[in-house]
Image (cartoon, rainbow, N blue to C red; front, side, top):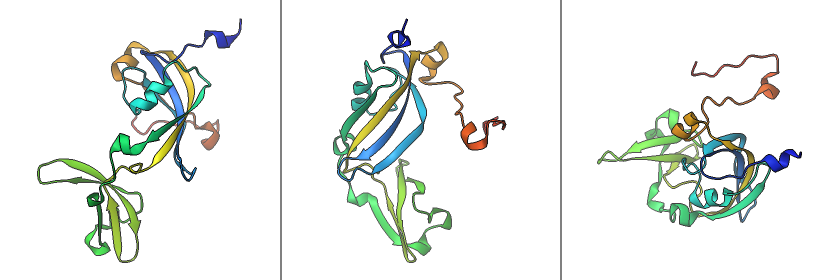
Length: 181
C-alpha cells in the first residue's frame, strides 16, 4: 500500500507543521523566511492570518501553496504618525541598532511595539506600523506534517516541547540542550 494514501488533510484538531516565506509581490524579495517548521493545532490556534489558515484547510503534507495577501486589509493602512525620528543622543545606546524592537507605553498604559528602521550618525527612526503594512505579499507555505493532535497539544494549541534538529549546524556528535533547562 502506498504511504501517500494514508496521509490526512489539514482539518480542525490536526497538528500542522509548516515552513513559509513571505515574499513582496512587487519586488519578489523574500521579506521573512521560517526554515524550521512551526506547528499549531488547526481550528484552535490563530497564529496565521485567517486568510492563510483558510487556504491551508484540506491540504496534505508536501503541498506547497501561495497565498496572496493585501496587508492593508490585514493591518490597515500605514499611519505616518507612528513613524518618529529623533536625535540619536536622545535614544539609549541599546536601542540604536537597526531592527531592534522597542516596547513603548502611552499615558493610558497601552503598549505598542516600534521597530528601529533607520540609524545614522545624527538620528534614529522608529516605526510603530507593522513591517508588512502597505505591502502586497505572497505567503509561500510548505505543509510538512499533518497528524492528529495529542490531548496536550489540543490544550496548548501547538506542539509541546518541540526541539529543532540542528545537528547539521553543530554536528551530529554534539548534545544540545534547550536554554530553558
